[in-house]
Amino acid sequence: MRLIVRKERPHPGAQLRFTDADGMRLTCFATNAQHAPIAELELRHRQRARIVQIALDLLAWMPMLTLTGPARLWEPKRLRLRLFSTAAQLVTTGRRRILRLAQHWPWTTVITDALLRLAALPNPG
Image (cartoon, rainbow, N blue to C red; front, side, top):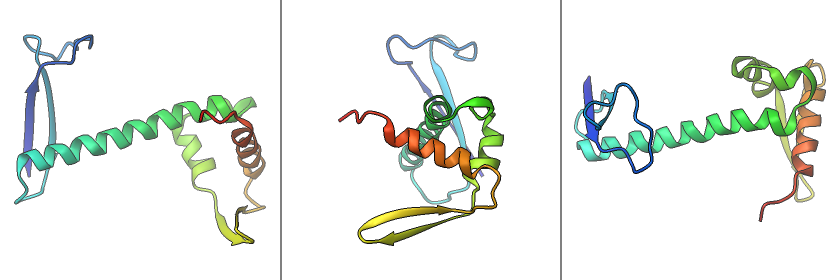
């Protein structure tokens, strides 16, 4: 196991954290990759961090844009349990993809209503 620590200047306009020493930002990550160069490991770490950030943004915006009622206030753990772990089947027929949700799932209507609201949103492009 290796711990890789990087010291860098924050980009202009970034707020400093209390852990930033002498105006420099410390970032670190642990890895068990044995023969990869440090630059490659850091790139992989930063790419994964971006993906996690995108997922968190989606997790924050999805309830605001698509959910209503009490479902809009669900915490991420409850969203994962009730919405993201739903049993479903993706069927392709007639050049269309249809998502068939399990009818016995208690939150199927919440999901279908959210998908309808998502489809009704204006296209940014």
